[in-house]
Image 1 (cartoon, rainbow, N blue to C red):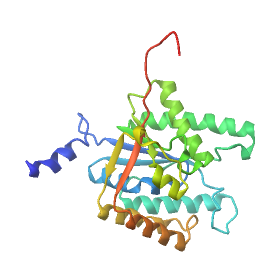
Image 2: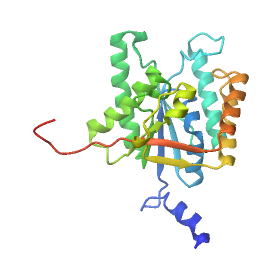
Image 3: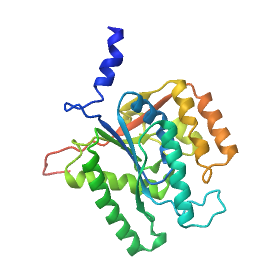
Image 4: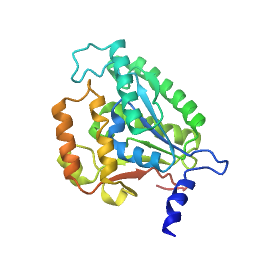
Length: 252
């Protein structure tokens, strides 16, 4: 029976028509997939098509680079995310090219970009027809406004279109202890309903993508991140599924 298990797991990654099932991860920035890289790797090895969608163009991501905001930074950040995808062995990212997802570009322009984001997400989700979707929850991982808006836009789309059951949505969820220790948003354990375990070998491979992001992380930060993750032997990622109760009541 044990010899059959790998085949059965792999078979589950294909639809009835024989097509690969798709794990779709939707994030605002190049480098956000580092948060769930081990999970992306695991599902890729299980036979899934793993597709990352990046909402913003990244031109304002001047975190540690001396480059000013603009097209050259857009180009570099695309190269960095392609580097990461190749190391992970997943599909090349899809770039939606949204300028920003906050009001620093002006309230009216933000409204227009949010509307465009919803339109593009609808097109891509319909086209990719994923088995499930991963994104950020209301905490935005680090309370980053564009993280929060991107996750909210994905949620908004599924609720608008009646797709909550068709495309199950899972938010990244950090346990309280880890959230408080690392200044991350966290979720009460009773609401974390998915636990994905992964091997140390997968974590080691996932950590290899960090040096791709030379505009976003210093060598010292990469080293510190590696040391913290290797020291944590739990090797597990948590998620919270979006669940919407159907039916109408005449009271709250």
